[in-house]
Length: 111
Image 1 (cartoon, rainbow, N blue to C red):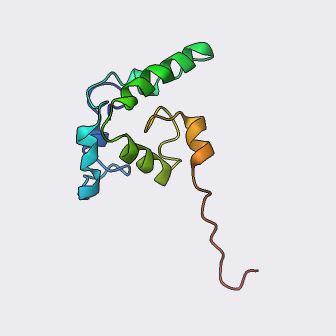
Image 2: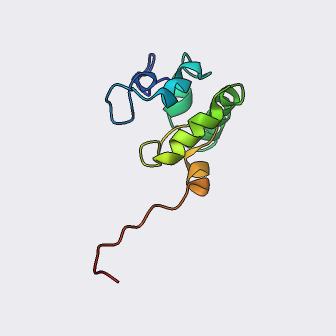
């Protein structure tokens, strides 16, 4: 994925935490249609109609991507890390609608 600051993103080489990626399951990023695209298409967020037009341009790239399902799955695994921009062909509000509910942890002894 192309990063929000321009150039090729370190996301293709780094995990969301910023550490070098070692899991084989993340090699899909190297096959992403967006890896050489202008990051502003995916991350700059103008207001109003311009935002929707920009999202549509990004989604058009996603529509050609052979790994769009993997990208969407990754963005839904950690919705807070992928809160901005277009990921897996979805806008932030679309991801919020389809994201699984957050886990609720209870402490022992608590009702």
